[in-house]
Image (cartoon, rainbow, N blue to C red; front, side):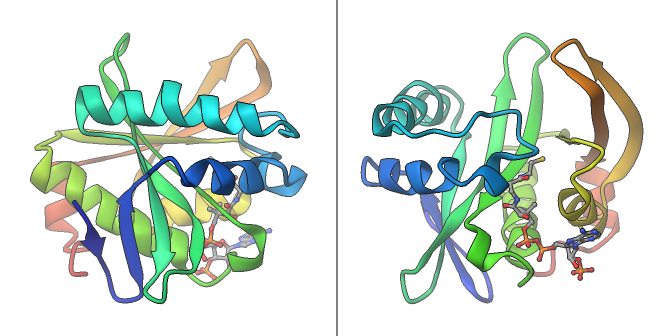
Length: 178
Ligand SMILES: CC(C)(COP(=O)(O)OP(=O)(O)OC[C@H]1O[C@@H](n2cnc3c(N)ncnc32)[C@H](O)[C@@H]1OP(=O)(O)O)[C@@H](O)C(=O)NCCC(=O)NCCS
């Protein structure tokens, strides 16, 4: 499966993406508001790929997808994650620092929301961000998601701001004109 938008190609991750995950997670600025620690170990990236990304895709057809420019330049990832305990689906994204500020996260996320609602027939997708992560919060707002308050988390004193969007809201807002 491959999703195409105006500027982007979005595809499932492959083994080669371990290198990309390593590059992303070794930049302290990239992981700063994600809750992840900086990785200096390539095996960590491989573990994320097999234990989380491939596992989610095999079980739920969800997961973090690689996002590239049409010339093949790797930008980062965007995708959905299923939490079996709460049965919630969460939108997430992470891009290489040199590609921030071009609207790529918003463009990729819109395509992923459309995939979630139209192909996976989800009813609701939520997203969390640390209150200080203003660029990420801006993306959630641009997507037409609704602020639902602050969720406490014992590991993060500042908690998380919580946003969500339903299939109906997504369709009504007509933001899925990609
Ligand atoms: C969050 C992230 C994915 C955004 O990617 P991006 O491609 O730059 O996002 P977009 O260009 O679509 O939109 C970013 C918006 O934030 C705005 N912004 C950037 N820095 C900002 C700041 N300090 N304060 C307020 N707004 C800010 C941009 O101006 C833009 O809004 P605009 O289109 O109205 O100008 C990227 O910064 C990233 O990868 N961060 C590290 C990983 C991360 O934190 N992921 C999210 C975890 S919840």
